[in-house]
Length: 290
Image (cartoon, rainbow, N blue to C red):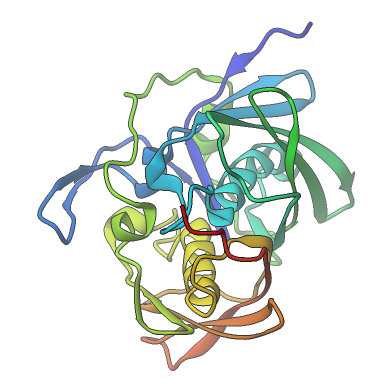
């Protein structure tokens, strides 16, 4: 069995990689002190095992879709992005990786889970594009979902990752344990002003290395917009196409749905309502009461 090598804590999302070395402190809408990047509070730990990247996190109720006992698909999308990002860094470095698309396919509602693990593998690498497959399983090894992500090297070959980012890949970094203390959407300050619309602000603890809104949190906005049209339901499919970063914000996700199939557009409201992400979703039936 291959020996696991602990990786530094990167958060890879939509267009860029964030290496978290500095702590930040913010205050949530309910007045609670919050330390560090929002995604660090998901408790996802990663390691390298041979040619694969493995990750794992304990499931807590704050990860559930409101009104259900099911883990959010957007959290699986975030973890898939992190795992895929490590593999992409290895093959595309020192070029800056750009996320093209990310899909999550869930077998059944994610209920009664204590822990979720992920294993990422390289499917294909071309000269500038890489495709990563991620298996997501429960504590018993049962398959829960499949994630697929594709990345390309930034078109401008002169745009390179800083040396400290690539050099840090081989260094173990010990980080304090963190977990969500409030529901994920509340922690991210994602609000639903009306059915079919979700607003995600640009905040310091929600950014990537390029100072644009983190792609995993954009997945949350997509999920919130889609599920607001189907209260009590959860997502079986979350497919994201990243078109441009959300630079100014807020990110506004607007969903339409018919027979469980949704279409969601995410626009940068502060940057001329430019289309940033186009997504499709599908829901499982609503969970019965009780």
